Image 1 (cartoon, rainbow, N blue to C red):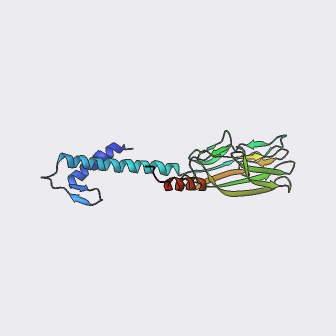
Image 2 (cartoon, one colour):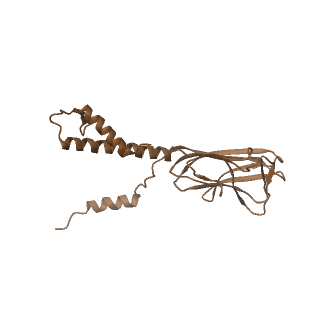
Image 3 (tube, rainbow, N blue to C red):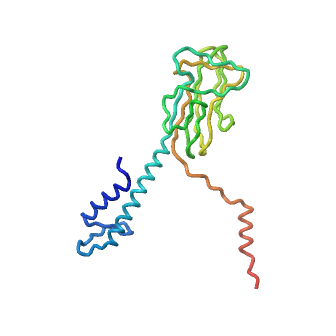
Length: 223
């Protein structure tokens, strides 16, 4: 892949040959070969460098905005019952089908939001023995939604939610104590994707701070 600087030089040569320069207002200026100075060429190259750097930043930003994952609980096709356990247990979905952005960790079962944005998250579980499943999506340790089914072994349930996540927020699935889940690499899944990025939230000034500012401005200066 060609480097940004190589593109700058290549575009510079092409534009110098075309004798075109763009001013600060974005208007094209025709350079007269007899009047083109070294300063004109320096301005042209600086402008091209700025444009290439902007394109590279936009490319990096687009990569950050591409986030999606989907994983199954079990890696093999063997019919496997997970649980029941004596304590609440974090589920680790080890068979990764999609992991764009590498934000899901199949070693821990945790999805970490890389940027602030609106995310769509879904969890589907199949009931294992002894026939009761109760699991929840946890966000930084807080229960966001649950999947519950007591219809018997191999029954299934699913739930989903859109969540505004801050960069660094962590999501995982917890199976509650004395419950079980079943999978054979395709039935119990944990998935999500970034719907769109969001700018960092701004903190509005409090009423007390606003009142204090008004009072301070209203006090006349001492003589």
